[in-house]
Image (tube, rainbow, N blue to C red; front, side, top):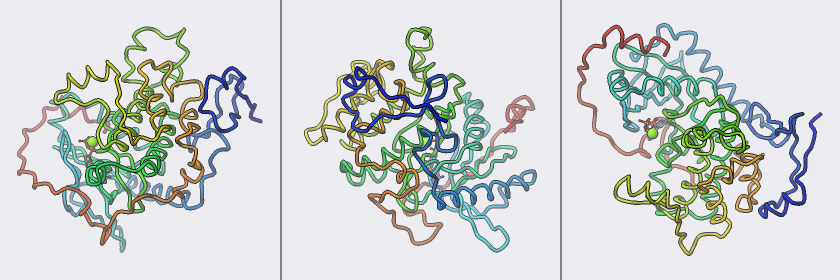
Length: 388
Ligand SMILES: Nc1ncnc2c1ncn2[C@@H]1O[C@H](COP(=O)(O)OP(=O)(O)O)[C@@H](O)[C@H]1O
Ligand SMILES: [Mg+2]
């Protein structure tokens, strides 16, 4: 039986955003009871049969590729257009023939030599390990992974609508409702990740894709990391925090909530809150913390953005005792039914156009990669990828 805690009168006064009754089921230690599958408070979300079905499909595909993994290689795929280029390689559209069914996937390819040169071996392993063990309606599904002499490969679902970035630049800025819709789906994805002690650390419109129905899919787990500390070890209970933990705030869950504040601002304004031509200028502005809001900004959105872009992580929304719940219960999100949101039942503001499952017209065009003749790795270098 979940025990229920309500906030005291004093807490109530100090949280003027509380518009809904705060009854959070807690465990014997007073921590919110979390549903493992959704990452949300127990009882809040009932996974719909449609979502169950999608997750079963994902599990089936993962099992299929797990069974053939020892012989999985790039020649089993037919290569299409490049969808994006990144630090270590590129992401290509590929098709795959499974008996009489043709699947379309996105294949992320990373050059081993580049990963070594940029000292990113650990990050790439994190990316693969984390994506392999999660499944969420708003996070890109990883089906399998393999490697050859030169590259690592991650086989993912193809998200056909392109980057949120492209859509945002195309229309300039999003309406209040559109921004709220995307932000709500991201909140649930981050809450889920954090419930598994995963910090994402790379939230930005380039890594947010729009799927065939117009819903969000977070991609690029290249900086994601498992932090074994509990939520409040990094973000809360200030009395017990060592200075170095506070100073490494870039590595905590709080950094994701800060980034959410930046994202909400950028969607509504069309540009980020702290901007300068060079990175140093940006850092200075972030540290100075002065945010100017355009006149058209919705007052509740402004309030939430301020609460997320709070430098002091002991005060930042998302990092307080009730974690993501404070954000979900904020007035700006009042129109959101979180159960419907999780189950993809809220109406997307924009549905991408496409002619077929392998349509790449929502992505920028990229020139073909020059034929590569990478220098062979030494046995020591090769050993770095033994566990990929
Ligand atoms: N599953 C996917 N479906 C469609 N496009 C994708 C997918 N994953 C990545 N992309 C595209 O490729 C780009 C680069 O991939 P990403 O994983 O972000 O690499 P990097 O770590 O180099 O930034 C993304 O910004 C996006 O445009
Ligand atoms: Mg990226």
